[in-house]
Length: 130
Image (spheres, rainbow, N blue to C red):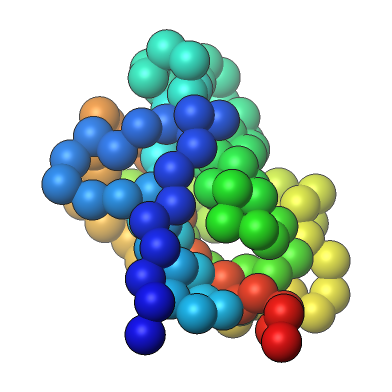
């Protein structure tokens, strides 16, 4: 079983002992992304919608580095420090995804790294090249 580490400068660098993503055959496991601007490694300015968009842009960058895109995501986990923001997740997600949508979970958490309000991780399935 071949394992490939995925890295791109178009997404925030790992701020701990993890990889941006790990590809095993046609499956890619994307690490959690918070709304960091890759160039500055600071949280994006703006409201929760801006933070959610930044997370999707970060996930897109890692997805593309692995040979896919957001539409290849089959499972998305959303972590929010305020579940009251979940309707905004749905609104913004509709800007980035179209049916069929990935499976998804939404989890309320007490805190996230760098005091972010949102974090997402994902599993992506790439087309079979064989």
